[in-house]
Image 1: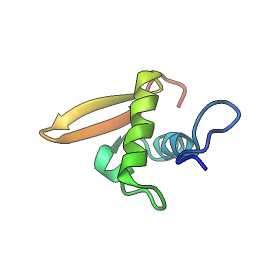
Image 2: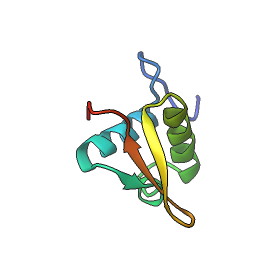
Image 3: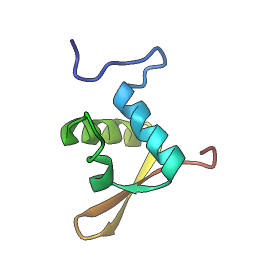
Image 4: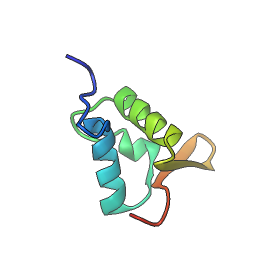
Length: 76
């Protein structure tokens, strides 16, 4: 069994959870996203990396060693 199951549209369940949190709650720090229940910080980082490379989310440095993740575009 794979670490991240993939839905029919190619988005992993963890990526979907990250997108859902960002849609419902707005931009979040990476630390906050890594605190999602039932997923490891490594899984969240992998999902955010993939979403960033596909231009679904943007990552912005807001302080030394602190990053904010937000959805790209206006269709939130």
